[in-house]
Length: 199
Image 1 (cartoon, helix red, strand yellow):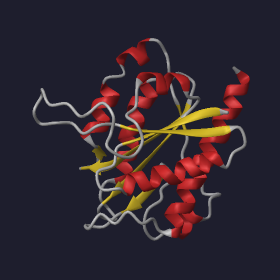
Image 2: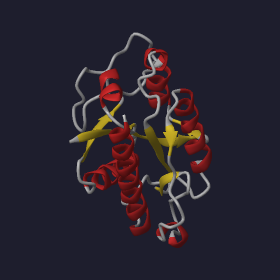
Image 3: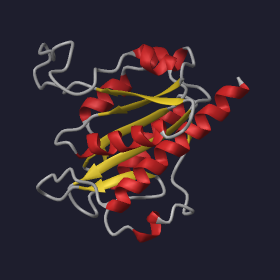
């Protein structure tokens, strides 16, 4: 089995719900498996540290997760049109991976959740792509051949899977959001496997 990293930060569960559906889509592709990882919160106190192992959910990501996987799905809630600080902090620490080309030529996609319909989803997705481009990754979106992209009245963009959580942070995905997240996982897995066979 070839593994694809599904790396995310989730504050109230919405991005985690998307990550689970993307991972499920990856598992639908024969020969592919999802390696799901998260990142710890960032403390306002510089000396404060999270426990090395999370109390619940997937393990925290390490550099080797990126090095060993053949593709990456990166997810974050929106923070004023940008990715959340914990994920940005992790990504900002990947200078070594950039220097040794650990991610170069690997496919990647992005996903997000916001509290409102126009809560910065598209700018968050686009800003998450920028460091991936610097790493030489190959970015994938969701094509309009996925009919749910035209049918959705909540989340879902051609830039990546998304969810509108509302002000209460509802983590239940709409039927279209679920379909698009799974489709994104399948597309990433299929592309990653094809590229891996050529190496």
